[in-house]
Structures are given as C-alpha cells and as structure tokens.
Picture 1 (tube, rainbow, N blue to C red):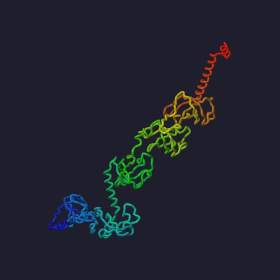
Picture 2 (cartoon, rainbow, N blue to C red):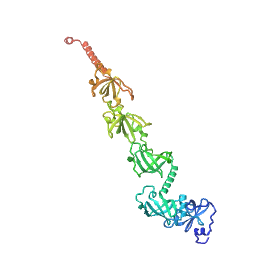
Picture 3 (cartoon, one colour):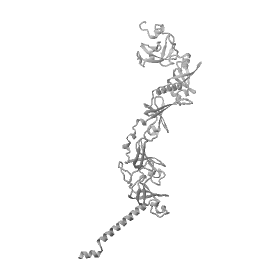
Picture 4 (cartoon, rainbow, N blue to C red):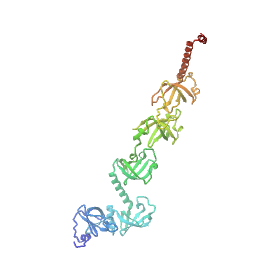
Length: 480
C-alpha cells in the first residue's frame, strides 16, 4: 500500500482481495460493521465476510467530519459491483442507468430523486440524470391539493415502471410500506397493560383514535374518563396523550388480517370508587347535580366519576317520569340509601327538608303504634297512598287500606280524600325496610285511640268527683 493511497484506489488495483462469497446485486440493501475510516472512504465488513466501502461524503456531516467510527453497524444499498462493492445511503445518487432502475424496481429499493417540475397529472422527477414521472395520486399518502409545493424537494421513491425512457415512480407506495413496517415493529413491542405515549388523530362519536408509533388504537368513550363525557370534552386532534393498552385482537377479514387495539385514558386516572365510603356514606346527605332523566328515575352526579340513581318511586306516588319534577343540571340534596362498590351502583332518596350536607338522615321514624300526620298523594282501588308528613321518598310513603279509612263501605274515597288532604293515622305495620312493601296506616285506629283517650279522660274526671263528694258536702265540712 503506497503512502496516500485511498481505499477506493486499493479496491480498484485489487490490493484488497474480495473473497468469493455470495454475489451481491445492484440495489440490494446490505448491513455491515465499520472497519476503518479513511480520508475519502469508509471500509465496511459485511455480515457474510465480504468487504465494501462508502465514499466518505456519504457518511459525513456538512463540514466533512465522519459520522461513524470503527465498530459501528451501518446499512447501505449496493450501487456498484465493478471490481469492488460500493455502497450508498440512498440508491439513485450519481449516474443512474436502466440497470439501476430495473434493479430498484425488482428489489423494491428506494431511489432518491429531485422533483423538478409540475406535469399534467403529476410531477417530473430527476433520478440522477434520468427523467421520471410521479402521478399526483402517488406523490403522498394523502391527497395533495397543490403539487407545486413539492417542486425542488429531494425525496425517495419506488420505481413502479421502466419501459425504455418511460419511467414511473411512486412515493406513496414507499410511505405505505414504511408505515406498515413501523406498525409491525410497534405491534411486536405492544403488550396488554403497557403504557404508551401517542397522538390523537380522530374524534368520533364512539371514541378517540390515537397513533401509538405508527399504528392506531381506539379509546372507547367508556375508557376516556370515569365520568360520562364526549370526546371533545377531553381531548383535541393533535394532543399528545398517555394511554394504557387494554386489548390487542387480530381479526381476519376479506381484505386481510386486521389488528384492533383498545386503549384507555381512564385506567391511568385515579378511580373515585376506590374511596366510595368517604364519597357516599350510607345514611348521609350529599349534594349532587341531575345529569340524566328517564322513566325509571334520575341520575345524580355526586362526585367526579360517581353517579347515583334517584328512583322514580322516590319522587312521589303520582310521578311517572323523573322529568315531571326534576330537570337536567338541577342541584339537589339527597341521602344515600345503598352503595354497591362492585357494580358501581348507588341508591339515592330526596333528603329531608332542611337537611344539611354531611348530616345523618336515616329517613322517617317508622314505629308501630305511632300516630302521624300524612298527605294524600293518590287514591287507588285498594285504598289511599299517602306521604308521612316530614318525610321524603319511598321510605315515608304508606298505604291506608280501604277498611282502615274510617269511611262507610262503598264510599267514594276520591271525594272523601282529594289529593293533598291531610289525615291523622296510626302506624299498624312498619313494612319492609328497603323492601317493596311500605308501612301500613289506619285512620280508623287513630280515631278509635283518640276516642278511647277522651273516654279515659272523662272516666278519670268522674272518679275524682266521686271521691271529693258534692259541693254541699264540701261546704258542710268546711263550716264544721
């Protein structure tokens, strides 16, 4: 080796013998380890023990400083096999020949070209001295409204057609191939439970699509938040988000295998149900806001991500739909009847009048034998449906059977007891706590108790008079 000789000179003279190994072809992508960095070339030991080289500018920065060192692993495309194997980072640099283009087409090797002008239906591309055509539909993986914006740019393409001087290239095919490779690489690294960073790409009625490294996953609405929300309330297109992988499923379709990835934002947020005993203690008054109304009741938000059901039966005996007495957005005080932390269900009832948030409210005192006042809400065939005065909800709703109304048989109860009538009745049956059967009252029993009390009072007064004697006897005793 003469002083000052370059690797390229040595290869050309044959000073470095290329072992007769597997023959590489122009356009083939190979990989090797940097053996030496010289003044104008970088020597590379290929994996199959052959040697090749890059011209130094291929692996240098703008100042000419080498970007690699011995031991680094590099990849490149074979651009020449004339006495030595010359590599390049991009195929298509230098002078391109028909053989180069055919090799690039056959192997699917990306080839670099500069867009020089806009043509009818596409753009002209210069491939190292060879003019090619790229249709507008193949210029990008998305619709291109203005092809002139690409003029002057140097990009990589795939050769799709070579017929004499007629060369057609596609950038879209290359972008789609690279995107597929990125998706496969990302998919191989994904596992259920992993937390990944991604970017929001679409907002739909049913959820949010997020790109997590070249592959899209779906955050269903139920996985956006612990609360019931719309997608636009949480994220916007382009937002960077951290998500947890909830599921990965491969499905076979007519168009090939399809990968469905389910993501979750909610999984990374604190679960409000983890501290539900503090949020909704049974028997306590809580403040809330009506979020939804239905024929079976009203849903009330009592904390972020926590809703309870105020059943329609708690809203009055005549109420058929929650909207008759409540409206969405209305603030309301309720008492917690029950909590099911497993099924995430909370039963609510209206709080007693004058109750304060956090105070204890166990509902009305239902004791057999107690005489109470009640308001007639409804007249049924079996009797009167009443609300015990001072109570709210189903727990204070009671029935006065026909026989206990104190009226004559066959009386018109609707005339005798119009809605809103206040009656005095005695609790004869406490009903089932939290069950379907409520308390039973009796107006007749209350009247009988009152009459008995009056009679007992009268009898007690008569006995006192008998013991005291007549007024004349008292005067005689006093005079005597």
